[in-house]
Length: 292
Image 1 (cartoon, rainbow, N blue to C red):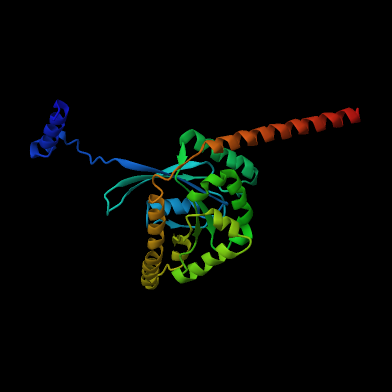
Image 2: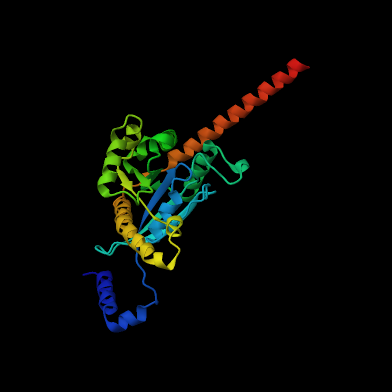
């Protein structure tokens, strides 16, 4: 045994004693965490921010605003401890601005190209890898609204993120597991959505949340028991949904993909925008020459 090995053994032996634990105690429980970066994307008002907030706080309740709430790409770290393995995970949820933005002030709405550029710039600046991408769709609206949005996002992300992509369908708090399975099968097989489903290799998962608007309809004292009953039944349905999403995200630890290509997309978009502006300037100049 080398001198270094003996020193390490003596240190370990000392730290296992009561005196060693007392001397080395900082007053904080410190654990090494495993990093998981998750990009959350989708159309405006589908429940992306609500999904993230409900993963942070399992009893989070939402309400309907009718407008886009997320104006900037934001980063929400979630610390999760696996109670079975006692391993800690830091899940960095990156909440993007919804495409097809609907702001309270219509003059503040940005194009999808501007929104994607902001997202890519944030990612390129803040992180180097992504473990998972969550495509968020609202139940019953995939075929009606989200097909074109998801195709645009797939082109934005590129084929390499296919192995890291999943779809989460929100507002499923009123669906049984059997009913959702029928819905998911329809998404997988329908000619319009099959391409999206195939890209989301990790699968299609349901999500739901408590709704303040619904709960506030039961206001009287005599309706208090009904409100409690609804809360209990809803939590029994939606808690397993959140557990399944977290388990799938944790399973993505160590399966990250580099994000350099997103920066390349930003640069290409900027070049295309500059080329477009140059063409517009030329057209206007030509028009002035003709008029004169």
